[in-house]
Image 1 (cartoon, one colour):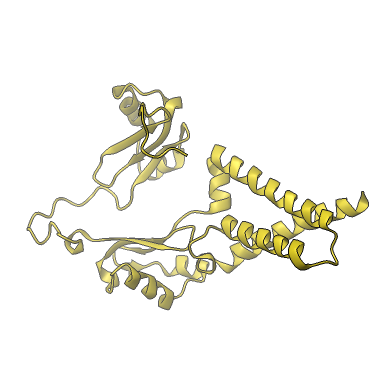
Image 2: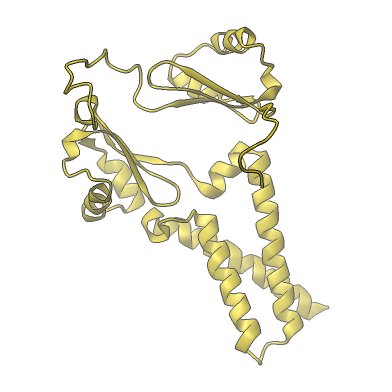
Length: 237
């Protein structure tokens, strides 16, 4: 019994250590995976490898450790599915590194994100001039996404001399998630919550039924409800 308790404690310590270490190393270390995906993948692989060839460790001990990690992963994913703060904690937020053609050095230093790596990722999405970028951000999985300024976008309105007025904001603003209003985003963008409630009322949608609501740069409000009323979904898990 004492041996099993030791294994459980060591497993929890190993998981915590890996999580903190991955957070410390930064996003480019785990490109294409979130921090949690990175931990889950290497840990389960390591445990399975020990089960296969490390004869000095009893099979039941390895299975206890494996089961503990699977249980932790399941609980974390369930919490992330149900709670936005849990999602943000385990997956992280995107980090803006370029805004209106200007590098945000403080954000880059915080992630230990180098200019060489930034230029490589920009070239991968066919951007060779930083001044053309309206906004670029490093996603939680380490990839770089970018939006060019209007006049540099493909089949641009600039080429057609039809450049419209400046967009109201650079990136979409998330207003609701999982039926909960994101008050901070409303306040930072001077959006009244009553305006949002009025928009829901116009569409005949109840607040608790909203899965996701986002305000696009062009001012259009996108609302998705839990019930999509699609009789035959194209892809169903």
